[in-house]
Amino acid sequence: MSAAQAEFPLTTYYDASCPLCRQEMHTIKRYDWRDRLRLVDCSVADFDDPVARQAGVTQAEMMRLIRARDAHGLWFVGVDVFVLAYRATDNRLVAGLWANAWLRPLWDRLYPWVARYRMPLSKIGFTGLFNRLVRWSAARAHRRSRSCQDGLCRLD
Image 1: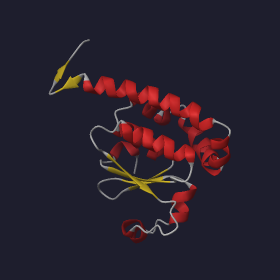
Image 2: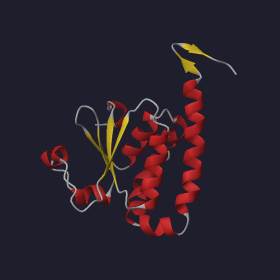
Image 3: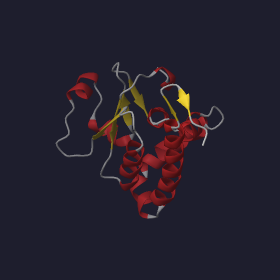
Image 4: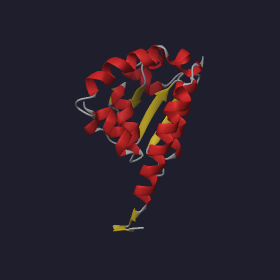
């Protein structure tokens, strides 16, 4: 199943114990004005999600690579989760970067490495740099989406 066929809301299982993961997910959620994202911290010791358990998705898998489940119960892993999360907030710029056909092979190889080393990357400041880009792009997308309401667009 491709990310293009997903239905919202999207339940995203992320590692809230990781500063990079937590900051990115909370920044995305801050701009989720249509409430299309559900964030679930899968890092807690007593984590148990009956739907994930029934689907055979383990906490260890969720902690290794980000996972999400759409409204129809379809599961997504890694880069597809980021594409969907940014699409949920109408952040076309960042969603487009993650989904770009030319860049996608790079992201598919790079993301598992970033996920594996997310804690050390958080310690060296990668979190702050990346978060600034996400906040700027999310605010831009939010302003754009709010300029068109009820089928009418304002041209400020």
